[in-house]
Image (cartoon, rainbow, N blue to C red; front, side):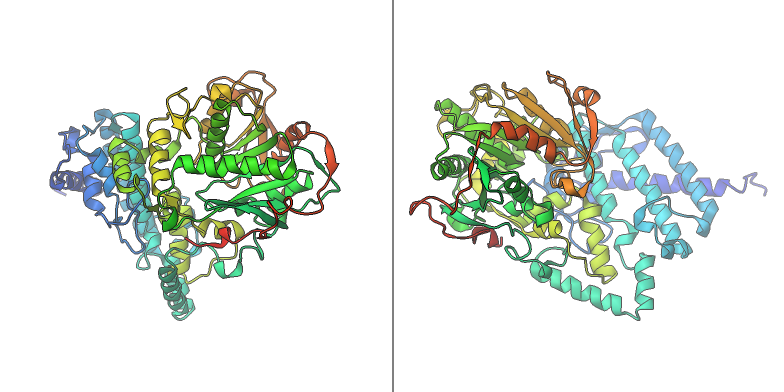
Length: 614
């Protein structure tokens, strides 16, 4: 006691030492990173990108947006964040001194509290550590609490970085990826729940986990659902119809009417070519395609071919001219309609908008109205995907793919999974491998695992013209199919839908299309995310949607939201009511598919193109 220290001071000293070690690790890593801008920052802090570069060695795995993703079993680090940090190298990134001091003080206080609780420490509310096994195991509970404390501190450090908005977002994204990957729940040595299951099952859960791991290694991706339960055309994509046209890019499916009469103006759906069309036709109860048919629309859908090497040279122009515009023309030819109604979903909506602009430049108006679901046309607000895009990265992709090649569907799927890693990656790593569980059948997750490739030139053009330079909304800036794109010439009525929690097409990005088209517009916001918000049938009675009676659309989506009214249930009924008066009069439903020998039925829906695996 001669030192005069209080009993709590050793813990404060330990906390301070731990925090200093953390800063020292960052500094050491930064100095070891060639080319890093190791700025002398307050309290010894330095360039966070450099530290993350050292913590996360590259795996060499290809990644569509410029970074390699963490691999299963990556331990406390992450394999592959290289490209993103290469882009950041040389930037002057440092911390706000006042925020850093506050973080230090908070950290020491929290560590002292954690040490004082010792093995009685409990993790804060977090579903990864919510089971009784964590609470009843003092060592596991302490490790979880310590992890959450360090995670909060790392995120606070990320938030304290000074720099432009994009740099700050990149730092935060990288830190969050590392934090999620290093959670103690992801490793058998620390996961109390998995250990308890192993003891209770006498090792059977570990044996099953190894079998699941070997199965997933063989198939090339983490299982999110029991894929053996589903078969395209058998229990997903089952709406009755026939393929009535095909070329090397797509098949056109016509669906059998379910009503005695149909509207004279047919309806064409253009899904994203980055995915397969049957997200719109999963099961009869949640099929948007079947819903359209039930509403009396003579319905056609583009089913994209899954590209192989024979399509590796295809461009954006090819997809607009020989697919979207071609599908519009064939639908007109088959039905004899002067104009049709069309819908584009996600990238399918972007392509539909380009086709409409090309046709308008040619003096043609074959589409009477257009619906855009979670679609980006103005790429000002692209959400988290913006962290990957800059000039060096796009140039690299243009060198890699500009003259040909295939962007792997598996890499694209991995990208989108790691936008929500705890939900779409680590959750299944823990369940499948550590606990030996088999994921339950789920049609949407089966679709999510059914990847599609992209032609390299298409992909490279899309990156530069949209995400990097946002040229589509600059009148006359971009040429597509030999025509200057100018959406001021696309004057048809449009229905624009965005999902409030969409992480791929942020609600602001979807809403921005209201500022693009000059004609009559209706904007509707739905609850939930990119897929769940769209696939929300009325019969389910789930979620909400928001509409506004305002006749003008302010530039800021938040101003629109402030004027909107919430309505319980699906937005589908609102859209159906909007489309009905635009569909023309009702006529007798056709008795057969297609038209004559030219457009005779080729094969039953869903056709063979959608069954090709990446």
